Length: 307
Length: 233
Image (cartoon, rainbow over all chains, first blue to last red):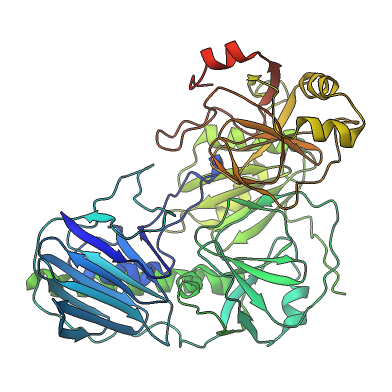
């Protein structure tokens, strides 16, 4: 018993924090592309941040409760429509916690701001664990059932948590190991790139002017991490959370950890600019971002547990 | 054209030490080496020592990524310690040698032989002639990149377009390298044959092959292939 997938839209999958410590075997990290929003959805049903969530991408999708479920949604702006039979009985917006009664259908529709909505259930989705994680690159299909415990929650509409940085702020980056002096970042300056529709959890392709780079024809593959910016030809690719563990293209820049979650909310055609920061700044921002998120999740969790 | 270059000198290179330690992310370093086997031995040594706060050590060719937990480790101190870490003498940890039985009946064997101006049996004997060093695991969990192929076997590009389905166990070559598909996947390497063995299993975290190990391919017949199916390496 749990939630049945009626229509997963463009792409939906189950994610958590992913697999850390297995890149040595070639196992990608995976996990929620916007881990911050996944954490917020979890906190709204009093889960720990690492509980498994449903990651729903870009286009509308439909899910049906097989028994009553305590759910919460966070992430992209959009609408959640709850239907009983043909009748829409409630329209909600993330972030929100609510009960989906047995037999009721939920339509998730991300809108203009952001690309992914995260749907958490109290106790987490109980899909199989592999190497300590339920994260999976298998796309959900109509008819799939996500197991979860029965539950209910009062309707909760917290104020949308303020993000650390404005939506259209540049992505902050460090020079990459193939360009430690930052020549590519200097050359692109404030150039605006556009997110290509050929983007996925593995990587975001960026369209824009070419900045040809002298390259080492004998370059060997080297380990990479999500957020790496590689040049494939002259096309920059920002590696996503499901990227492989190594890459053969020049690694010219690296999105800082504090901004990784923002990659998960970039939509096709959206404008992207970059802002170089120092290693010291990147570490400080990472520390602050983690501390702020911990505090936010703790506050949401206390409020959720109290109800 | 933008010129890029590698800075060195962020640590004192010494015998069996990294030639440079540079940031990969703000909480990970890339240790660079002058040759592949030194990188693999250094990575094995770091894993063996199991430093607190080091969450993953990923070796690929001449680079080793060291991922740290910034909550528990001082990153500047870690960088200094990494710069001092020495790989053991060659021979202490030369890596294991894995015998990979292969039924050489791959869909690309005949075409590969034609492109190289060889007989298929010559391709088979050349492929099995020498052990190959594993440089990296990647592309798929547990996929070993090994080499180098010697002339005249080396130099063929990948298939274009790649196959949408390459079966698990396929043994293939591309460029100067050879590899084994641990699971079914799309792929562009030229398939020479198949091994009956399970060489990696994600569900049980079974990854017997590591960078620095050696692979030796041993031709087998259909009977042996069937008899050993699903056996673990």
